Amino acid sequence: MALDIIIAMKHELMIGFIIFLLLFWKIRSDEPNPSAVISVVNGLLLATVLLFLFESKDVVLFNQMFKGNELILFQKSILSLGMLIVSAISFTWLKNNKNFLEFYILLLSSLLGMFFMISSANMLMFYLGLELSTIPLAAAANFDLQKRKSSEAAMKLILSSAFSSALLLLGISFIYGSTGTLLFSELSVSLVENPLSIFAFILIFAGFAFKISAVPFHLWTADVYEGSPIPVTAFLSVVSKAAVTFVFVSVLFQVFQSLALTWTIAISLMAFLSIVIGNLFALRQQNIKRFLAFSAIAQVGYILVAMLGFAEVAQSSIFFFLIIYLFSNLAAFGVIGIVSEHTGNENIDDYKGFYQTNKFLSWVLAIGLFALAGVPPTAGFFGKFFLLMAGASKGNYILIIIAALNMVVSFYYYLRIVKVIFMDGNENPIAKTEAGLIPNLALLLCMAGLIVLSVYGPIYEYIVHIVQPY
Image 1 (spheres, rainbow, N blue to C red):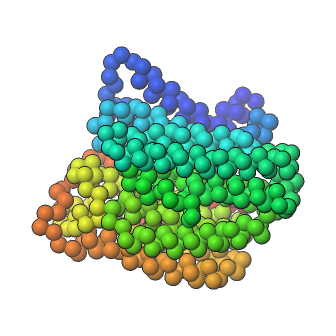
Image 2 (spheres, rainbow, N blue to C red):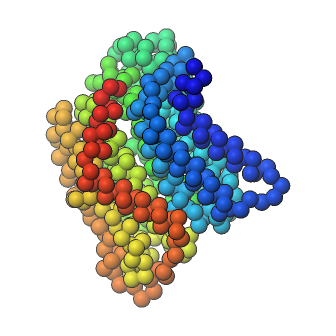
Image 3 (cartoon, rainbow, N blue to C red):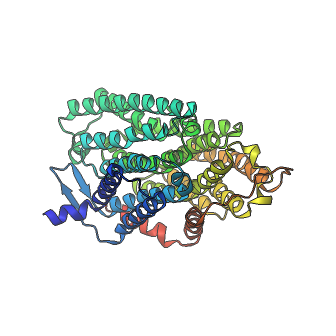
């Protein structure tokens, strides 16, 4: 039994070990070498990713509080990979920051909460994991203590998170009052459509919508993205959003299937608003972090479109898209973080003539933007194509047409940045920026991931295979 627990919780135990190691380094009297510590943490994070190679059994532990299976193992490995890339692209920034140990402790604590959230088989356990994943992020958003915008970002994040958590907890309490259970396996069969269960679902749905920045629960997103340090923004935009989406999809199709008519209407409306408003606001942004914030809101809209399809097709397409989104978004944030660390520039116009002095970084940023836009033949095109096809599997053709037309609109604002980088002249472009070996390797990993996902079909087939039993 003990061995089964260790195998099932190997990701949690590894992250817990890293956190303990960082705390040990923190309480030592002598200052640790930043480069050595960061390298060790990156090595351990790589080992966490590689845990995916070990066989996983279907287990349910702790009175159905915790579950493990191949799909959950895959999701945890994707989140671990995202954390590894965030750490690698932030190497220079972390090395020059005296509080780098606290940075890792906060983000790894958040990642640990995401793991528990994904493995939860009980509404209460899910809520505890969600809170553990959220509270450290608010502190991390305020990591640049000397900047007022960073404090504002932390305040907005903690207030919006508290509000959404309150809605979620109230919805969970109503669900318990309606059914007498919090176990996912029992809720899926005992939940019936009545005014109380519908109201409870609306509250839970609103809580999820806050976490993934779906319109109209998106108002915190742009300010938090802009004010947070770029490594925190990258983690928040990719790892945190992917974790909540994994759970949202699972809860939607496994627990609330009996309320499908209600959530189909809600998701249709939210998908339409997220795509349209995200695109319209992205068109007028000058700060590149705010631009990526509204871009992320539009991307959530496409994910919501896929949720309207059949469960198996929807989950497969969403999980595949999230991997593509991880590589493309982290490639973009990696370049932006490197430039910001060396020059402090974060406006789109600052990148005029960027290709003249930084050819490698220019291509990485351009390919990341192409993938986010869904330009063929990048992996982003296939990711969005699968999302739209999943949504169309139940005949949502009007919404699919609207989403496809908005993809054309998104080409404009993504390619506008590419035009600024490659075609706009600038007498004083950003000086040549030396990123360093580890950040460059992380950016190359993102590029390699996008290339492999665009040409290697068995990855999508594997995702379909592991989704089928669940």
